[in-house]
Image (tube, rainbow, N blue to C red; front, side, top):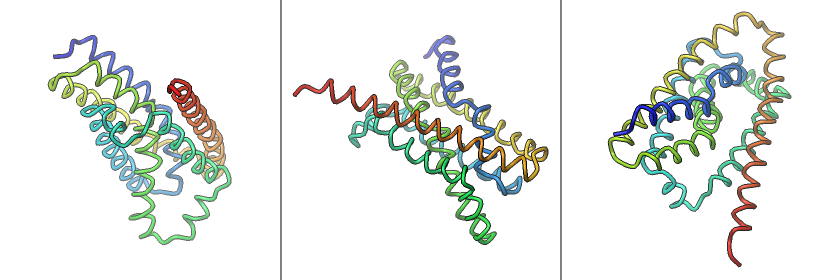
Length: 215
């Protein structure tokens, strides 16, 4: 059984890595134009998917990526490129233009489900950092009971994240149309910088892996 210090360390590491306060404004930017129930649906679905992803990595660790032949560096690189495309659409309001051309049914069923999976669940919540942290923590907690405790810690962190995302909806009332437009563009730039950092980290990891490989 894991000690209290180990559990506190795991909780702190995952919570800081997931960064719920940092996710809140990004969540508002990604779900602009949605009603409060739709935002809650996106948040709940995204958190559920993220929990499944992190729980799998907690149980099976680096073996999952190893079987697929995928390194964390490659995962960071791919996630960064996909995030950059989302950021591009946020800055130039491509996503908003597309939403205005779709029907309400399409937004409810397709748009909400797509955003909940990407980029909310992966890679914003269960991103390379959170997955890396989960794999690392899983290595220090090898027994079945300890892995179960780690999954409990993950659930606690994601529950806090869900509450933060639910409360983020109230901020939208004070922004208005102009405020949302400014926020979306600003967050698009921030998201682009985050995506670029993912790409840089992934490239560095890949280069280090290549240089370490014997010829």
